[in-house]
Image (cartoon, rainbow, N blue to C red; front, side):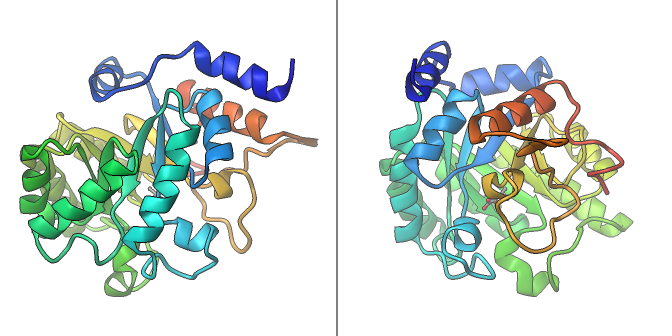
Length: 282
Ligand code: KIV
């Protein structure tokens, strides 16, 4: 059987994930796996390996476009890559990332941008930011658009934050994160990506906002799920590797294929062996 046929057979054993099933997984504490993806062929491999959620992240600015930040990514880029990924998926839930400048001006602007991504195939949109975005989240949710919030290190605000640094390290920062997460849950966000925060703060956020499915990246092992940038976990990214990233393309001396590496990620997250609280946490 060809590689393609094997993957198709594996994908065929899963039914399409939806928000109800994701909430059920979170409620029974089954770890949720998420990876970024930007194109159809890799989307097919990621889906076939059993990844629950695929995020077309604006990190495509870094790993696809070769830029040093996500700020130049625009809605046209996101819609194009969301369409490509949607064509490769059979089972995974698909999130499209609202890029910098496409949602901050008003709830109406966010709605128009979200509609563009949903028409491209996204089933949920993600946006960065806390308090000032609460009204926008409510506006989208009231109009039938599932929303994933994003708190902690929010790369679109890298200049305001003074660089890519751990957020919520002091008591005031941690309190603000918890308050923002609560507000997002009350506004109707279904999911929350928590990026680069101490594991203890991620635990507080999860406890304080029980309605949210929490997905961590550099947030320790206690969120409902984990996300990594696909190119990072495949060892394709050059430069210093952040502490929270594990290179799944190697198993000791043995080099793994892309499907093997993604399957290893899924297995490690599902078994709660990744992330390791000491090696990958803050
Ligand atoms: O854009 C992205 O890839 C993200 C993830 C790092 C969560 O926002």
